Image (tube, rainbow, N blue to C red; front, side, top):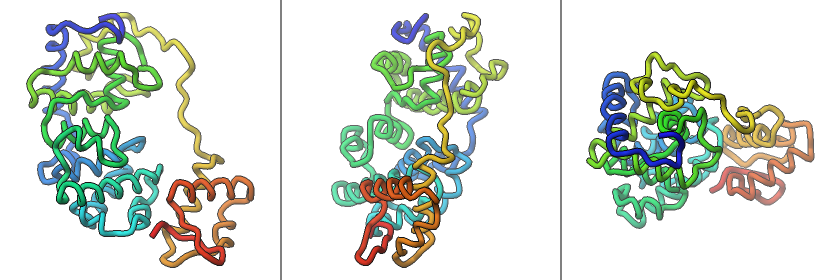
Length: 301
């Protein structure tokens, strides 16, 4: 297995499954969305929240969210602005609107139960290939390739022999993931969770710990001498001074207010009027802020 376009043999793939799953059985974190009582809705909520957001930030919001809205119909009955308010400071708040839209569709189309069929999941608003596969796999134990950033990094190193996967998921990566997928549904579901956890805890972007890795002896990247990444340097996303920061500050004012707020209250959060106006216009365009008469603003009703 020399690159991500080379399909592994069944023997190569099978040799990875058992050690990674055994490691997962011993070292997996006890996360609330992994418990049986979370159900498919709990899994779906976690998948929306965990996109580009670390577990430590998600945990308190997730617990509060499920306590308030234990079923999709409970969320669907609320105004979308309440979803944005409850999202708090998780970031990327459009995810809250998408989750609210998915809850409405589940309530209307599926009698309030998160569907188990992959195609029906994919047809829900705000749900793409990754989330549909993750819910089908983690909630319903189905056989799907679940390709998040952590899994892609593990596969790139263990099977592809490179330090990092491409910036965006490629057809070659999807083909590799399908080739690595165990035939048995239960094993495939376990493998999906285990390979993801390995990337989150051991084979991380900041630094791999090969002494703790259950497949270090088979890792193509390690066996090749850990060649350095070829291509543009991987830089973390900046936040300070960006429109994202301004948007967050504007939303914080609206989340904390139970009544519409005047323009002057929003003007106070950022000195640059051009950037502030651009950020506010973007929030309105995204449906996260609703302008009212007399220069007032609120979360969407």
